[in-house]
Image (cartoon, rainbow, N blue to C red; front, side, top):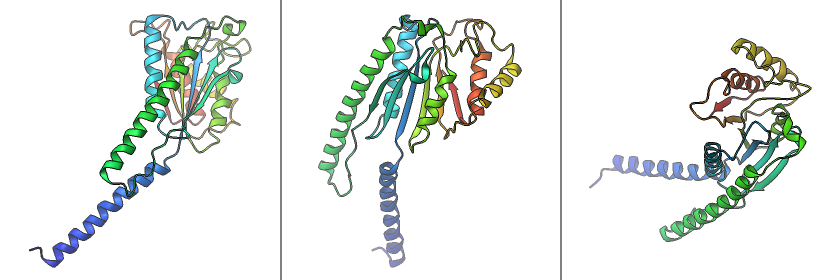
Amino acid sequence: MLKAPRLVILFFASLFIAACGDSEKQNKATAPNTHTLIFIDKTESVDVNKPFVAQKYQQALNSIIEQNINKAGDQLEIYYIHENTSKARCLSLMSRTDMEDLSGMNATDLEAAKTSYELSIKKERGFILKQAISKLNQQNNTASNLETNISASVPVIAKASEGQAVVKVYYFSDMVESVKAGRDFHIKSPKDNTEAEEWAKADADKYKNYAFNGPEVTMILPFEPTTSSKENNPTVTYYWQKFFENLGVMSVQEL
């Protein structure tokens, strides 16, 4: 027979475990939505028809959608990077699938609800992925493919940051800015990291009126591992890392 003090301990332990379970459910229910922004380079310097690029970019899209589309309200937008990037939105989709309230369900109903959610979210992710790959593969044969205005994405990111969602930004690009009235890394790229940092700070200052709310930025480059530094220039990606850091981005990754 259990002694009274031990019964009391077990009683409060069970309350604590139950409270933790309820808290976890509450946290999931109240977690912010995710707003995914994908910028796809549609200029002459990136060829998505190359087998390596096609495979890498399609796998990346699949992974992004799997990670970021989880419940009703999660949003995904795709913009094309070219001469008119900020006006080049080509896809905007929002998830409608949500997990129903599981509290009070018996084991059978709980399993059925989870299965229903998994089937629904899988179907929705599949639809979004199909649309995203279609936009990835679309060709741009217009004059807009002659300029690569990556920095014009800043107002788009700032606009997304106005909401309550967690903003995640992905660039499917070689990150070679090429603008007639601005930076043109095809003509002149930073000679070293010091110059890259100086340029990044000066260029970010032009966007100081745009507020970022801690978005995550990932640059998904189209280069194979054997690509030379002349083509996959490390000072260019370093420039963008510092550019975004100066705008208040806490996490900048390169893939």
